[in-house]
Length: 343
Image (cartoon, rainbow, N blue to C red):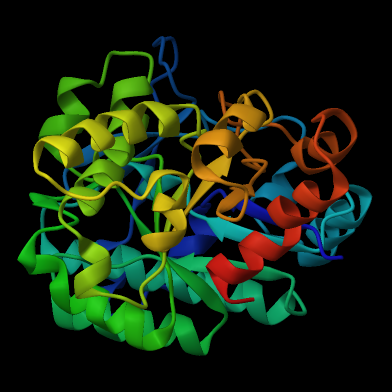
């Protein structure tokens, strides 16, 4: 049986932006340092498209710089061996927030990141898969990036619960979902937001509204909009949101279905809609299984970060301390993510 970490991270470094194509290098992020004597919430900042963003804040100290930045692939793979993990599905760090207001900057960042991840994948012997980042201000370029990702080891499309001014159900996004479906790439909504107004409004809260709620809202919206009928072969993943909200969202949806005279699929909802959700070991997984079944749940460690979703030994803990039978654990650690990511 394989053990698949469905949500691991790479932390971008200055080397990441070396992969931006030469004609866009003038748009690469710049590192800013606070003046000596100034108190700062971040040791360094990225300067991107006229804004400064914290750098090096959400960093897990149970990993070293070389492993979380994937600058030493052999070291990363060796650490995976220590953790008894076969495959990492890599998600970005800096893209968990909106970054650019200009399409050319959006494109430069996405192309640099995707080419960096393609290089990591080439060195990883098939064990480092990844989610492709899209420059969603440019639909034609986004489609090109999906195709590039598919050819270079990507196994998912990275998406935020809100993308610029667009909900994921907006007609604007239709060409992206059509292409993802054609390429057999799932659309994976990670804890993040891609809208500056939303991000700035909640910017001083603890991170719950900023990063979690837009994804929960997207889950609700794609179900209410019957996205599975428009894109019947497209898979959806919801990652690093935990899953304790799933029963709440399903209860709300059931009431709305009833009031509209629609049949409610009950615990078959996720399977019917091609949706997978990442649980955390802190969730009441038995209760979630009672509500939504066991065939559409996956698990990640948030490798490289240090927040409420981070648990470096989550995959081992699920089997040893999760109170689940081996068959259910096998599904969450292997069979389910294999289906989601088409590994």
